[in-house]
Structures are given as structure tokens and as C-alpha cells.
Length: 126
Image (cartoon, rainbow, N blue to C red):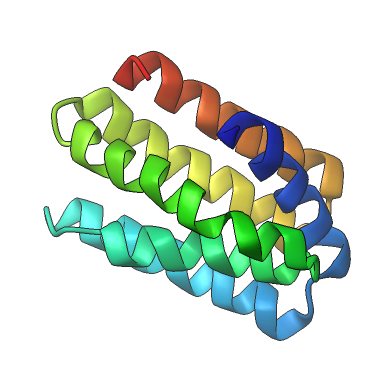
């Protein structure tokens, strides 16, 4: 389900998100990178990052999916601590996604989110 909905959420966030919403996503992304580099638990900010993307879609259905997505995100954060590659992919994938969101490039944002999820599936065997 994660792979079906989150790339589309990134797509619509790039199109519909306000400047403030895009900035909030970027701020959470930067905070997550810093938490990763400092070895801190990033679960709360990962949830907030993905929730901010969902909110920027201006689609209530996406907000209703958040509890399900939180489960996948929480599992991914825990599993990623066992894989240096997964951690590095998260940093680079988030940067790519944020770059496309900042540029308002919806297709790029969709593809970046798809890549991010595919990396997680591969590296974390989920």
C-alpha cells in the first residue's frame, strides 16, 4: 500500500502544496538527516515528514491513511538501524525528493518517492 499511495502523495504535494507546506517538508527532511548523522531516533520526525507531504496534497483521503503509513515508517526506521546502506539511501532519497518538491516538479517528486520506497523494500526486506 505504501508504494501505491506515497508516490502519488508526493506528486500532488508538489502541485498543491503551499510555500509554507513545502518549507515544512524541507525542514523535517533536514532535521531527519541531522538525526541520522547524530545516531538519534528519527521516528517522530519521519512521521511528521510524511504527514506533511500528505497534508500538502490537500486530499483528506491521504490524511486518513497516515496511521497505516506510520506503521510502515516505524518499522522502516527500526530496521534501517541494522543497515548502513538503508540509512545512506534515506538521506540521499530524502534530498532528491525535497529537491523536486522545492522545484515543484511533480513527476520528479513521484519518482523520488517511488525510489525511496523501493530502496526501503530492497534493503530492509519488507
